[in-house]
Amino acid sequence: METSKFLLQELIQTKRDFFKLFEKLQNEYIINLKKYGKEDARCGFFGVSFELVLWLMINLDNFSDFCKKKKILDGYIQNTYDDYQQYLISYNTITRTSFLTRMMFNVEDFLKSTLTQLEQSPNQKYHGLCKNYLKCLNYYEEKRHKIMSLPAQIRNSNHNGGFTEYPIDIIIRGISFKADKGERIIFADWRRTYISLDTLFDLLIETIPLLEKLSFIPSTYSKLWKQDPLS
Image (cartoon, rainbow, N blue to C red; front, side):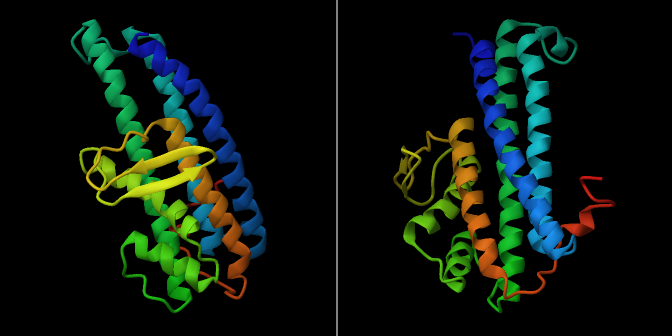
């Protein structure tokens, strides 16, 4: 199957997957907005997260147009079939990498803000932030720690030529994510990126009630907004 048709089929399922994540994050934003207010990180984090998924879906719509109509790219790249196919592969990779990188930046920022309010040091690598966050909430399990770490490990491999710096070994929803240190990750496609993020957010949503002892978590996200994202 040629690249454009294969990617178009993949995009249909990808948009379905991420629309479900979009609805989940938007709903959690509304719940925390009512409970804690916009200035609280529990609201802001889910707000910027659902907006980022919205950005992704809009980009996937544009990408679908590229896959359907080669003439959109006329005037920008050499008008050959091979150039067109290569551009689609690059667009797909860049979009997925950019999205995952920004999303994990948001997650890391939320963990740092929360750990600061829990009187824990935020000056750690992501792996350590996850472990301390779960332990502070008495919610630590090895698998939960691996769930929180997995999207970051996929992201980091994108900055390391596709190779992982640390071993990965976890089964999520019947799918194996496994790679030894120094191996190339082969599970950075859209479907498994979605599963890793969706599982991570399920876990983070589970932890929100455990933070009720904190009356307020200052949000760095509210500074990004001029008005409510739902207004």
